[in-house]
Length: 307
Length: 143
Ligand code: FES
Image 1 (tube, each protein chain N blue to C red):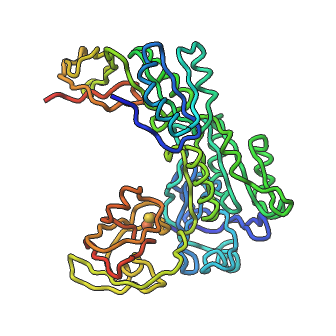
Image 2: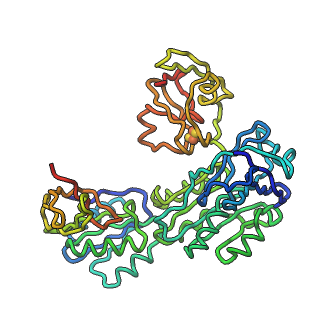
């Protein structure tokens, strides 16, 4: 689907918001709060949460990550108003829970994006929610004014430059029936998830969204054998199983590419899997018979896949 | 039948009517041995309020007569407890609500494991599957 960048708004020094409209002027597909779109710009495919929009336009907000592999830098430095980009239909791996009595959002930095649409939906429904949002400073805090204006009484801000840090303490006080949502860097999601579990929160009440795959500390190359075709493939340390499969022309579906959605799951017949996903349960992992090819690797030098 | 120990909770809530007290003793002993924090609440009249004041991370063990359990379980759900955060045991004759998978009628099964649906006549067997949505155990067609 082709969209045109209709407007570009600078949120902070590092964050820009892009308003996209269908190039052919038609209505866009509906989306639910927490949904994201995959975008292709300058050859980079990236997922971004929809912060606002409806059938007329979509809005995404992107933080310029200079250390990244280039997607966000391209959007910031090369995309201008009037440009055309390719997107895929919205998908939602981070929906609001139906069961929650109270929704609690914990955001760090650009992790605020999915919560913008979620807070809008909940306030329209008159549902109960609160936001805890950490940024370096007020100047670095994307959507500060919009949040203050629309959801001010439900929001707490934490600016680390002024020494006011967001901690896991709030988790101690939340009433039964709360659902918590975490979005931000890996370490942030990890710390909050661990804290909630150690307090006794049930897994079903925890929700998180990752924008990037978990880091693999020291990736090693390994061999793939495809049982059905007999092919042997080499996975170098800088490529994922999914990338190698697709390059070889093996058609495996995928979506998030950060190990969160389960679309790329493949059956493993033999070999020890090094799991880096956040989708499978502990029991599923222990069985060692399935893997998410977009992130997970191998600990035994060789994996035999049922492909 | 006994409670299963749920590990890693910040607070355990033991909740019963007169009849349920005894069934809670064993889990209470387990918690005491493990030196875990728990609170006992027997035969409370302000149950709805007490349940809704609880914090995330607490875990509820409830035991009592069938009707009491049904009623309290509903209060606990309304307060926000999910299936993952509570366990219930019934003393004496069970009187489960059963959901007919044929016509979707809900009826009482008494202590029967199998019955014919009073509404559509379908022979049902009462499963262990409790549906929070229907507030009843699912009744599957009996072969
Ligand atoms: S593509 Fe989503 S888990 Fe791999």
